[in-house]
Amino acid sequence: MYTIEWQKRGLPHVHLLVWLVNKIRPNQIDSVISAELPVKEEDPVLFEIVKKHMVHGPCGTLNRNSPCMRDSKCSKKIPKPFQTQTSTSDDGYPKY
Image 1 (cartoon, rainbow, N blue to C red):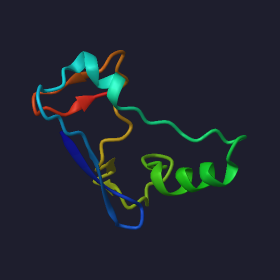
Image 2: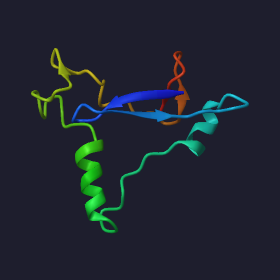
Image 3: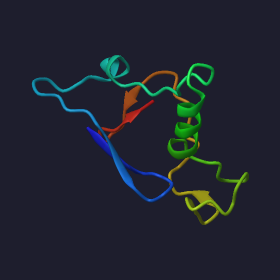
């Protein structure tokens, strides 16, 4: 399972999960994958770097000139719909 994303400066990076024996099940995804912002009070420099380079937006009505905007919509489909629990879609990608 993988996804390739483009940073604000146009550089690609990949989120990759490799399993060698058994395919991961939706109820196991949360125990393997997580994404958290650094704690601002503990490391303010790292927090600002992550916020500036790794967090999408603002776009949409807040910033119609954002590079991700196509036909008045975010081409990355952000914001994503809220998910109460992790599941996988028909194409195998997880929905968080």
